Image 1 (cartoon, one colour):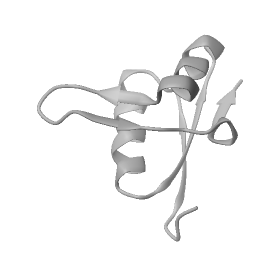
Image 2 (cartoon, rainbow, N blue to C red):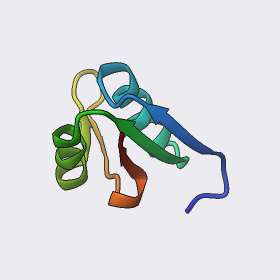
Image 3 (cartoon, one colour):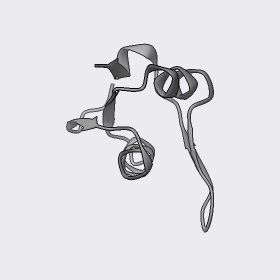
Length: 68
């Protein structure tokens, strides 16, 4: 757990995913919520990866993912 803000992102699609990875890699405590459970299951197993100019990956434990 970080000492910084706790950030919840509703929607782990393209925009929410990019924000989540950057914020998590910056050391913030990030929670992701999405309506597609299979998407969150994959994030829990493999993390969330961004590729391009700077490749990065962020891991999210089950207690940081919310299916709604």
